Length: 472
Ligand code: UDP
Image (cartoon, helix red, strand yellow):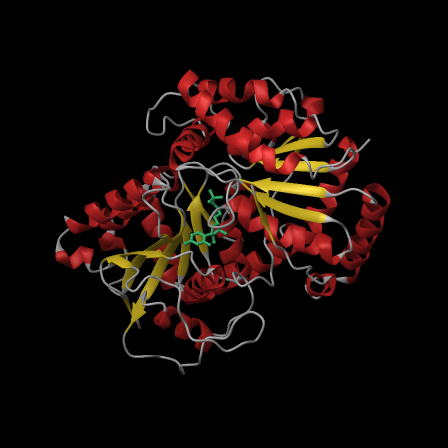
C-alpha cells in the first residue's frame, strides 16, 4: 500500500462558504470528533489516488480532519492489471451490470486475495488497537480480516450501487460476502444499495461531498478558465478572453505542462466560440459515453448549429487499466465512422493524470466554459461530476438514475432525463441553450443546493455519527 501525503486544510476555508448556523454545527462536530477519536488514527484506504470518486472525496475529508487536529491518514492499493480487471468486474456487478462478462471464480479470488494480502502486509504493523479503518469500494473489501485482527474497527464504504438484482449483482455480492463478515459497518450512498446479506443495523447511508476550494472546484474567472481550456490543447482558436498565465492552487505561476502533447483523440480541439456540452468521466461503459455520442448524433437537428459535444476523461494506462482503454477506443472508433459534418462537432479528449493539479484545473476550467454539463450515466450511485458542475452554476442535464435523483430536483436545479431517451436529452440541452436566463437561474439554484447538502461540513458531520457507531 502507498501512503498519500495530505496537507491539513484550514477549516476557515470551509467556513467561508457556510452560514452562521452551519459554522456553529461544524465546530460542534469537531469538538465531538476530538472527544471520540483522541489517541486514535482514522485510516482511509481507497483503490487509487486519483481519477475516480473515492479518491476525489478522500483528499478533502482527510485534509479537513487533519486541519481540525485529528490524526487522519490516507492509503491506496498497489495493484497489478490483473487485479484491476477483477475490480472492474466487481464494480460492474455491484452496479447490476455484466461488465466484460468475465468470471469471478476461484482463480480470480486467488489473485484478489493474494494482491490484498501483500498490500495488508506493509500496513498492519502500523495499525493500533482502537484505530478506525475506512475501506472504500469492492477492491479493498478483502483487507477487512487482516485489519480487524489488529484490533481496529473496520468500516466498508461502497460508492457503487444499484437497486438492481440479477445474476451479475448476485455473483459480485457472493464474491464479497466472506470479506464483509469482518466489517463492523457497511456504508452505502442510498438505502437500497445495502448488500443483500447485510442487516439494516449493520448499514449506514452517507452521501459524498465536493471540496469548494480544491483545484477542481476553486473559483476561476472566465479569463482564467478560457486560458486553461486553451493551454490544455482541448480548445483552440481565436480567444474571446484575455490570456492569463496558469497559476497553481498555492498562487505559484507555473509553466503549464502535464497533459499529453495532444489530448484530443477525435474531432480535433473544440473551436472557441461554439457552445459546448461536456461530459467528464472515467472511461467506463456505465458512464454512457457511447450512448451520449449516439444521442447527439441522432438528434443533432434538435440542437443549435454552434453546439458541440465534448467527452473528457483521464488518459488510461492500457497496461494498468485495459478496460478503460477499450471503452475509450470504442468511443473514438464510433466517432471515426460518422460523417465529417457530425464528427467535427464531437470531441473526445483524454487528459494525463500525471500532474493531478493540472488535470483537476483543466476539468475545473472545462466545466466552467461549458454551456451545459451532462452526465448520461446508465447507473450512478452519486455523480461527483454533477455536483462539481452544479457548484460552478453550470446547468446540468443528467440521467434520472441512482443517486443523481437525490442530487437534482428536476426543473429546479438541473434537468433529469431517462438515459434511454436520446431525444429527451437533446431537447433538454436545446432548451437550456435557447433560454440562457432560465439556464442561469437553474445554475444559481444548483450552487445553493450543493452548498446546503454536498460540502464537506455535512459529510464530516455524518461521518462522525457513523464512527460513533463503531468506535468502542
Ligand atoms: N475526473 C477527473 N479527471 C478526469 C475525469 C474525471 O479528475 O479526466 C474526476 C471527476 O471530476 C470526478 C471524479 O473523477 O471528481 C469522478 O467521480 P464520479 O462520482 O463522477 O464518478 P466515479 O468515477 O466515482 O464513478
